[in-house]
Image (cartoon, helix red, strand yellow):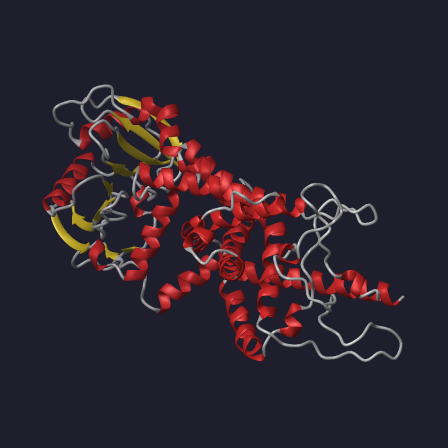
Length: 513
């Protein structure tokens, strides 16, 4: 036996603990063992001085071999990132309930009254208790039992704000919290944990790695499992959607891993796509795409008629009350702006933001995030109560709507509690799939006395040499384009390839030494 033949991945694992191995159909890569395969592909004869090698035979089966190797390495190397994202996302999903538990005194009123007090009176109470900074915005209560939020821009808080919670029926101040675009301290901390592990911009690479590879891993797994179901399992939906309860050992683990992945596939692809839209590098590419196809949300013109210096509101966080004011506006003007907006048809919870300067109008924006969403906005001349400009949610471009709704669904707020439950189940399911994947790696370890190892071997190398020419001609540009659109995916994939080439070169050098 040549040294090259010895490098073939062996089926050394037996579920009973013996060293007899498993059938060919249950190799680590899930493929039948080639009769004369090597680490580089089929050859005519064993290597040695003067031996002639044939070119690797091209076949469509090589595509599957390549997907197996890619899925294996993505699972082993990227799964830790996915596991952290799943667990931190699970914690973030239930922040509404956690907020009520921790901050219920500030967020809820003790008793619902007959009619709310004027905003001017509520703002005056908030300013009397907390005179620092300026009023940046006021958020009306989402529900009758909720408090009014008076958001103050305080210079020493930086990009964060001080939000004062006022009972709308008694104008009693219930407390204050340091918020970030409307999020409580707990929600802000869990949001940062999920996005960047509380490590700032550097930490965002972790979540972008997870989001970038999640879609690739899911699609590759679907192709491998569904293709295998047609050839080696019952030709029915049950064979692909349900685990094989009669199987034992690694076969049983693989069936649970794959069947669960099939059920979660659509949700995981959705989370991957929506997570990338506000990631650091892929998100910047997505923003450029929206600009190129005029897919951004329409800007609200806040310039008052006849003003010399018009100002437009381009803020994506207008609904969170993150604006700033240079000086406190007249509290009575908040009531005037709110009344004008209500008369114009803006119902539900709204954010009232003062004018930036004398030449600008006030902004009143709907902030109803639960389906059906409401995101209409109006610009109001508070002195006359006239609506000077308006944007309708119905007029947003399709891509802008999909992006906005996708983010809300990713955050678990689009469909209320149902959205939270679904995301929680998906996070738990993804965690289970990852654990089963690592268990398979361990179950595939060689157990023979002369070839023991802690984990299973990787699938064979060199599958790309046997790819059909059409796959190479079309696939290489497609991978390059994907790497450009998802830069973190492109860089990490290149890193995997470089390491793989180096490892292969070192092994070949050892064999020829």
